[in-house]
Image (cartoon, helix red, strand yellow):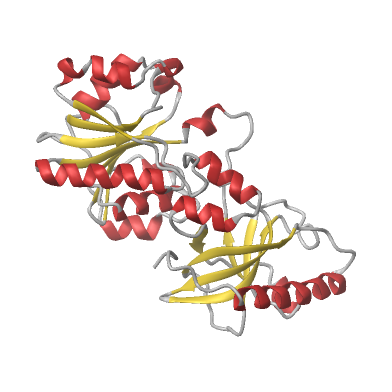
Length: 349
């Protein structure tokens, strides 16, 4: 029997940068979202579910539209609202280089909960799953494990070994499974192009935060728990709140004007996201944030960092005096940018 965990344990032990291996192998309830990891086991929705399937990195506006439709249809049919996703992400599993993720696993799960999903099957994307045929995926996962009665996907959805499964296959197996396939039209950005995680990553790589926010439906942020650092910034007159990225590879790097959510307030600041070549040799990526006119202790607290504008690339300076002089210039420029940039109405609350 799978073990139920106290919801508070999920929040306490699941940091933004990822989950411990022992804990991710169990089932948790987070808000009203029940999370399972395995294909094996009894049907998770004996009364039937309305579900969608995907990687869901970043939970952009296209994802939001799918999840909203699932939630609405599940409520109308008195069925369970459900989603199937994967960790690691399929694109990252096959990529020869680390995938630059838009959201951490914790942020993704929060997004599912906020979207009103009641059930999530978070499958391990591993060799056995990669080798599973599309037909077996339908029978074993969608029908038997999830009790699918209505399946919502995008028109270009592909699944199964060698991506052999598609909308046509799902429809061909409807009679076998007793479900109905629904296809949601692509959601387009203001430029008329289909919104995708790849396009959001591209906008971020180009430092076009406005376009990225428009596709996401909210500003791009990185959240995490503040950890102790080397206190180098404090010695230079710029104390920082530090967030470790762990195994997550950020889609952006450099120096930025930012806003930081502390509790229910959004505060202006300047941030460095990178490997700190002037003061560190370990190469560990770190998000360091200096909040303007703020000196409270944030150690152990969760904060959310919204990236407003990129100031420059990260660089190595000859000495700490040169670094301090550049930090003065960065802070002045960030203050100016933030003063002229109104708070985005879509900022996460």
